[in-house]
Length: 199
Image (cartoon, rainbow, N blue to C red; front, side, top):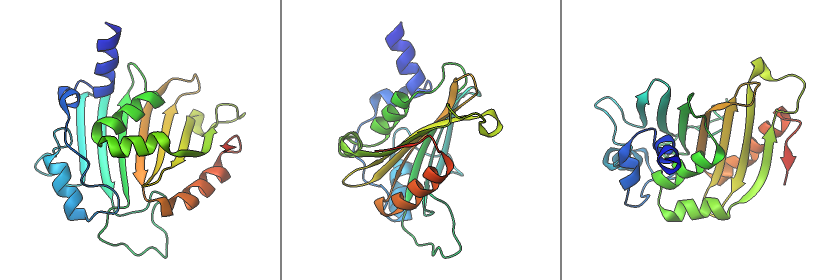
């Protein structure tokens, strides 16, 4: 029963996740056309008629999944940003207000969406920053945030969990992005979370 509950929670009830195969042929650095084609052919990420680079799935309103690929850097738009036609950021997010979200579930989402090469790059990646506002006196709007940045050989990775002041985390995301975008993101997070631990 425990194994089934864990699998259900990871997959948000989407049984296709258990049978996912293939390889990650579209990752940050690829063209928008290549990533769109990969998403369209992906057994889990196959978009609806109006979806292209953003895919939304929901088992129930309490359990939801979203995948988003964008040409915008992980840090967002800046005045000097010149947008190209290459994907720079890919993000998978989960919402589960019933069982909650853990870092392990976000890592499992990464493993399911991508191939072993990307997953192993994440597993071997160096942790460059960890943060949490759980120990701060005041949390922004009572929201608990904790996360981790990693630098791999191929990409940089960022997972973040969001929860309430009681410590229950109901939202999570894991992002794969270009290594060149890691320094500004780390700088921004360090400026925000005084309790972060630089590795």
